[in-house]
Each structure stands twice: as C-alpha cells, then as structure tokens.
Image (cartoon, rainbow, N blue to C red):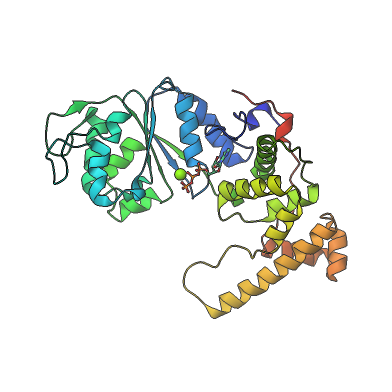
Amino acid sequence: MSKSAVAMSGGSLPPTALILGISPAMERVRSCVERVAVTDVPVLIQGPSGSGKEVLARWLHAHSPRAQGPFVKVHCPAIPEMLLESELFGHEEGAFTGAVRAKPGRVEEAEGGTLFLDEIAEMNSALQAKLLHLLQDGEVSRVGGGEPRPINVRVMCATNHDLEEEMRAGRFRPDLFYRINVIGLELPPLRQRPQDVMLLAEYFVQSYSQRYGRPLAPLSPSTLELLQAYPWPGNVRELENLMNRYAIFGSEAVIVNELLGKPAAEAEGAVSLRRVARQASLDAQRQVILQVLHAHQWNRKQTARALKISYRALLYKLRDTGIPTRRTGRTSARAVPPIQ
Ligand SMILES: Nc1ncnc2c1ncn2[C@@H]1O[C@H](COP(=O)(O)OP(=O)(O)OP(=O)(O)O)[C@@H](O)[C@H]1O
Ligand SMILES: [Mg+2]
C-alpha cells in the first residue's frame, strides 16, 4: 500500500486523525485535501451519516493557516429553528424577550478560525440569506439591529442531504450553494469503498488496543472478508464502534456473531410483498453463504461444494446477495507510519 493511503493519523483516535483509504473515491478526496487545507476557500462536504464529514472538516482546519484559531461547530438541527439565528449571529440587548444583555453568536466566536456548519440543509431561507451576506461581504449583524460587524472566518459546511435536489425543490438558495461549494468533497457510503474497510478496521483495532493497553492479534483473513461483505448502513462510525467492542472483549466472535446475525440493508421505499419475500429469501441465502464461506476460510470452491451448488451458481449467488466476488488484496495500516 502506498504511503499516502493513510493520510494522517496519530495516537488514539484524536479528532483530526483521518484515514483516507485507497478506493478511487477517496483518491479523489486525497488529491484535493492537502491543497484545499492551506487556502481560505469555503468547503462543502457531502456524504451519508457516519462517513467522516466532521473528521475531515477538523483535519482541514488543523492543517490550515487558521489552525491556532478556533474551530466552531454548529449542528443546525440540534438548535430549535427560532433560536438558531441568535445562536449563530448573536443578539443585541433587548432584541427579544429574555435578551437581557447583548451576546455574540457562534460566527463571532469563530473569529480568526473556522466555522463548521453541520447539516446546512436545515437552515431556513432567512438564515440562508444572512449566511450569504457573511460569505459575500464578510460581516454579520446581530439580531436586534446594530452596526454590521466585520468578521474573519473560514466557512465549511456539511450535509447528508443532496443539496442540488434541495435547490431544485426550492428549499436551498442556488446563490448560497455556489458560495459554499467553491470546493465540494464527496464522501461515499462505506459499502461503495470496500477497499477501505480493511484499512480502517486495522486502524481502529490498533488505536483501541492502544487506548485500552491490550495488545490484540490482527484480524484473521476470514473475518476481514466478512467485514468487506457487510453493507455498513452506519458507515465508518458503525465500523469504528464494532472494532471498539472487539478491542474491549478481545474476541473475534464479537464481530462474527454481530455481522452474521444481521440481514443485508433494509428494503427502501414503498412496501411490495413480492419484494419483501425476495429480500427475505436473499437475506437468508446471504447469511447461510456467509456462514459457509467463513467456515471454509472464504474458499469459494469448497463453499460451493458444501452448499451443493456449482461454482458458477455460487458466483451468481454472491453477486445477487451483494457479497464481494473477488478478493481485494490485504492491506495493513500498521505498515504505514502516520504522517503528522
Ligand atoms: N476517514 C476516517 N478516518 C478516521 N476515522 C473516521 C473516518 N471517517 C469516519 N471516522 C470516524 O467515524 C466516526 C463518524 O465520523 P464523523 O462524525 O466525521 O461522521 P459524519 O459524516 O459527520 O456523520 P453525521 O452525518 O452522522 O454527523 C467518528 O468517530 C470518526 O472518527
Ligand atoms: Mg457529523
């Protein structure tokens, strides 16, 4: 594996330790991040929940000229809509009932640093307009009037919504989209980058075994195959949590039992009985095939024999049930020294 496959990591899961991986999608991210970090341009990070949007934003900040300044995160959905404006932009004394004294907002707190707006799609149109004003003119006005104040912040945004879709639906301002999306980074779901699963798994095992002071054997090839075959609906967060549990209990049975006991990704959308029946059948077949593959150290010929089907039929079944049909080369995070 190339040295750049692990972009940066350090100690035991510091918030900016970032494993970029070796999948083509992450190669694209890697080709951008180092160049983007040192600039001041806004960055938009899109990807599903648990795919690493925050860890990437923190890494970009830590490697930017603003690293000594604050990193202020605002998780928009966590703040009631009525309060979000004053939370972000602050308020003047008497701006509303209960505003007994003036208060700076999170934008002002980020002065000299980075403002990370998480789940930006949740902002209403009035707030979108205020954010646009900040990005265009570099100033904010607190709720309740007062002079606009000049602000020096770098804005990074994240979302797990499709912002282009939100724009088409009229829920997100196109002018704001183009302002925040000067650099767009896309983190795909983990199931679309099976090449990265082993790298991340080994990194988490190593980090948690260090944290708990408990040396752990590297994961067996058979368990690594199981990890690659799993669809990871919770993305990297789910993988990290599982490796954490493995490090706590010290037994691969934790991983095997958990992954073999789970059906493939849930059926989406409207319920169709035929689809449910087909999905149930595929889940059952998938589980049996995975168990037999695991029992035969992922030897496909032996697995086909044990299942009393032809090798060719097994390959079709693997495809239909979403189990990888080709081994991906084993890589080791341990072999790569972290780049600080
Ligand atoms: N590339 C990565 N390298 C190292 N750790 C990662 C990576 N991606 C995700 N993680 C870990 O997975 C967990 C989830 O990551 P993070 O919080 O960045 O996801 P997110 O995309 O912001 O999710 P959400 O949309 O739910 O907020 C964190 O504990 C983080 O450390
Ligand atoms: Mg997040």
